[in-house]
Length: 547
Image 1 (tube, rainbow, N blue to C red):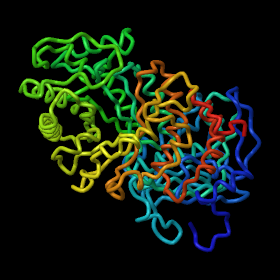
Image 2 (image 1 turned 90 degrees about the horizontal axis):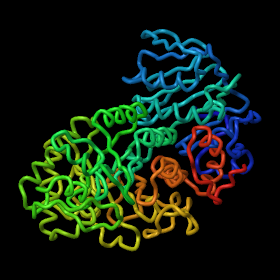
Image 3 (image 1 turned 45 degrees about the horizontal axis):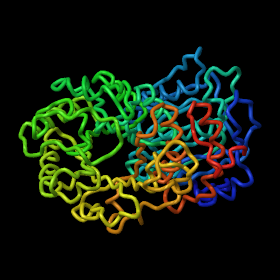
């Protein structure tokens, strides 16, 4: 931000007051009518997540036309071409192919252009050193629009901010005579946490690839960057393992309540991983063990200590199954799974589960976790597991995934891992388990952890959640969505949104820049956009969606 500027500054802590005067319209789902032009101040004040710093340039704007040049400067980071293509696809109607130009070093940026560039130093830019990783600077005025970042991920985040600054018409590519006006703004932004995630349980009820991709699309709009896939449980095994074909032939054949189940081939999974990567989202595969394993036990008899496969399971109880931890063959099986999955997962993580194990002694459990952690590391991945694994002698690189709700917090050992220099991802069940009901009248969802209205999902501070776990020990936050009570893509979306939008701001915006009243008003302005992109979100009465 330029020192001595007279432009109105919009900071997250003051957004609520500004919104009460200038909130954008968000109607009920319908073909989009053209809204009245909004002042730049109002547009920037509806951003989610709230940016670290934002400045509205009053009475200034830029109109994007089919002929607006899109250029990439010579100093743009690796991957900028991919981001520029996604921006071109967003802005151009289907019949227009927007040309993207790469400028040589030293060339002048043409006037009236959309510019994708690396960070600039000096008095005017001031970004060098302040912008890194996923951070970015976005500037727009009547002369053009500039997106600058030190990485392609940062540029992609800038595109998502630009997308929210544009009218909802931008989501309707086929609309006739769209007018895409970018308000005059200057935004400097950087995420609070590196891990801002969601989890989909595709094991209890199988979710086809298209449903997962829809979820990824909605995540990207709000700068979420991790999708954790729970790929195995008692009720189903959902990814093809070529060394053990029975896992999907038998274990993938059913789900909670019965029915056909389903699974992903390795080719389908690889396509999903690539789709996520285009949106700068990392896929984290989870294969729960040593418990939650009935689908595997039913598929491969030798994983059982008695060599007898149990029947397939379609109920919802937990804790009754376990791999035979004393058998060497079990670890050869695990090695095969980790090896094959790691080969088609470019991301650095492998989630080994590890929760709710009742069939092993504590010592057996600890030895199992430590051995499997070693297998994961041997295949070049960073191990991760639910909070129970913290009691084992873990490498400091392993990630502990906290999940215990408030009333059982004392039994969580995440602080033990933090003390050894490890990191923790926070998914407290009473705040972030989005399979819980919004209120007791809902048909879908559980209540065992809590009833979680939107405010409860938003109004908490990760730094004060667990004693002994703060600062660098917190890698980030994640919103799990377990699927015992849901089976259609629209139901996954309904339970996930808008609570996942709330969590996106928890993970991105500094604590001092967040306020519930500000968020709920800003979210009201997103109703039309969520409808436009086809998300079946819950219209919670906590938000005045008519505004």
